[in-house]
Image (tube, rainbow, N blue to C red):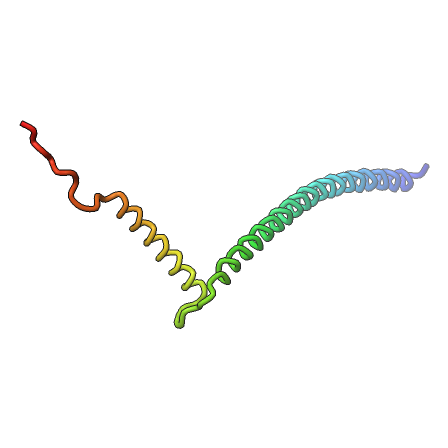
Length: 117
């Protein structure tokens, strides 16, 4: 073998080792990225599920709210249905609280105290 051939062979072997090492590094990086993408995909799926659950809850609350609003038959001028419903509820709660308080208070003077000496 000539000296040129030996140098060329050593160069090829060196290049092969370098390329092999670079390829291994690239494969390791690719594996790490695939893992990150897998984790990210799992997080995205979990987030999507949470979002769907939140939407379902919001729709249920919206249906209940609409039921409450449309229970207000007479919308008063200058008020939205929301304001009218809120006023009705507050008035009723206030009236109920006053009625309970009135029942608890004595309705006049109590029995007369008689001294039996």
